[in-house]
Length: 262
Image 1 (spheres, one colour):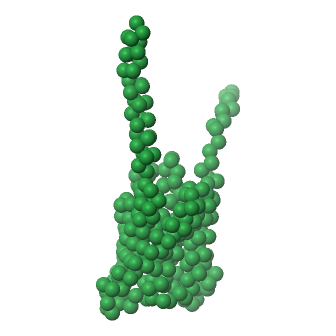
Image 2 (cartoon, helix red, strand yellow; image 1 turned 90 degrees about the horizontal axis):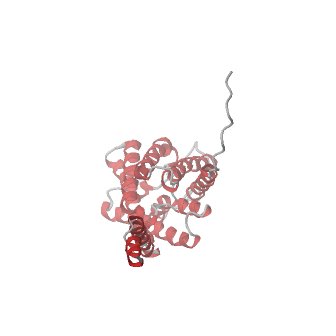
Image 3 (tube, one colour; image 1 turned 45 degrees about the vertical axis):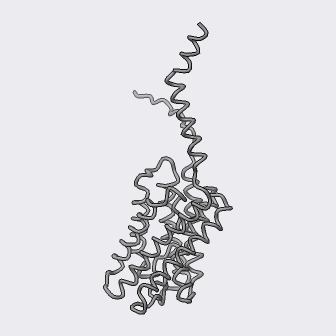
């Protein structure tokens, strides 16, 4: 009887399912991406984003595709990058996003400098690639994010803060919250970039990303107003993550009071 009991317990479908789940959990834990793999994914994703975004700006000088064309290319490039390597690193591709997520403990602070360095390297190499491929056909300075009169420093700072806030709030809603629709996360985030560029592109260049501004600045040697494109997006990103952290806090459902009808 003891032997029979042992056989029945071992062959229980529930125990078999539990064993499979334990095996899968162990596999995922042991084979989760390393810091090097995450850093490389950030480098590649940022390269794709900046190569396409800055490339569209350069093309616009020869073949006018307008701000709408640049917006579409940038949004689609981000979507492609997210679906390509986002599952490895989390698809930040943006120092402001990395810093903001670290503030609300969505990423360990020790990864912040690694991510940021790789993002800046990817952006710089992408811009340098465009400069080499285009030779002297187009001035690489065209890819710089700039603003001019009558836009003031404060107005540019506010513009960059607001559009980055919109971008990062979208990221929080669809990518960091388990209640969000992660299957369409890349599409939603790409659309937010597209909208922001159409709205703010003619005014500030709609950077939303210090790496997007620093890459061309480093290659061209032109750092004019660069602080606006570092501070503005970071302020907007941090505010978005902090706000969404407050919004996503859920409390146990309270029983509704009984209704009495006459």
